[in-house]
Image (cartoon, rainbow, N blue to C red; front, side, top):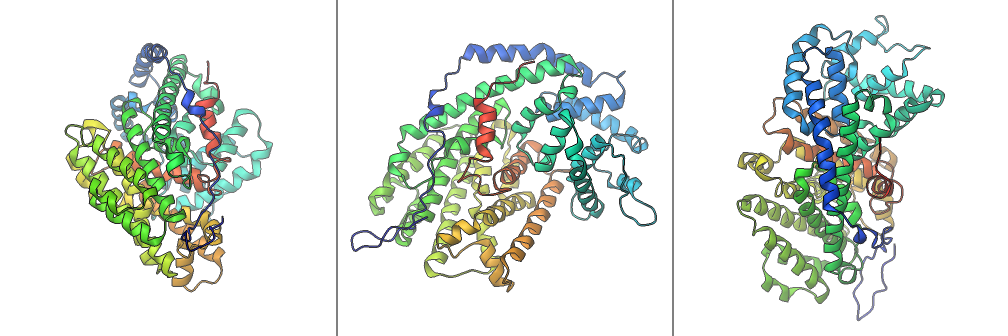
Length: 536
């Protein structure tokens, strides 16, 4: 966290001395046999049809069907049976309104009034009991995370269930103990879907083994995705290596596997392979731009680079410092290659404009730091929604999603919907809370915590952080509300926005897990791409 010494020859540069990659060239040596991929795809076919028949089986008990659907969901298999599942849920909805008092709580989460049955009628508080049904309490706890604004009973339920689970967790054994420990660390609804699917294999063996066809399908599916995604990680790692980023931008964080993991959270389904590769490349460009503006360039160089990015022309190279030119060429080439795709020009232009807006946002932050100005919290958040990077990443994700994303969906996205603003707010503020000390030590005057303290005249940074965390929780409720039916666009368009918010919780829950990936992201990358795949 040092800055170089200012001399007459070399300008002052706010160097961050980021730690190097913990992976080296490991992922450059993946070798994926396409015949092995095809074998796993073939192995999925028979159990997939068996699971389909189970889902629509009219003779199966409705509770059993819903439990099966929930396991399908947890294993990341929903997209294979979307029509069948939607049809069954519509059928069961009316039936289960009548049976709501007897039904598993986790499967009827939208009827918040059901939780009143667990309250003491005199005190109005949730009743504690000595003999706790740990599995039921765990379901109750996961349920309580689905509350939206105004559902205060779910806020109460979350506090109650968390307290109860913490009280009993050390007395539990086996898979149930692991389930509760993991849920307390990271509730399923805020986890990374691909990782949560993998952990479901380990922690919910009974549920996975209830139907042999489900067990076989889940195993073959995960192994298929694992090979496909290792191939994608190899592709983006080689792209990064071939463009010599380590030499031309040595000051920037080398985090290609971590960025790929981040983009994997957008969507893990195989049909979005191209979208993951495209978005990871753009994420690399975003990271280099961020570190250039924040940890190397002078204010004048940032102004020149921002102007060049907004011109988006090769002849703008002449105005740039020599060290920035190679990066600028790569940036232009990436978008030029994308523009060669037929029928996606509107999506590419939207993503490109979002990148240009991001560059302007970074310049605004740099101007604040250069002048020593601490903006108002309102000004900071307005610009921070842009510098969260989630607008450019979510728009970039649309490029490779194919025909499922319509012009109407793009128009909805351009309208800056509430759920997107909530995801951006979570990204910006959660990042700020966990990187505040690091940035302050580097002499950065512009942080969300600092802006809050100035605007609201708060002298205690812990109080400011507590209030900001409340804003983050409120934004989560906006996201959950945006996922409810009726929706303006399909869940396929909304899901990447939701999942980006989930990844922020994964990365920044305890510290800056991206800059220092040893604690969280290393575990996830190892689980998905290094450890042996599950075998049943």
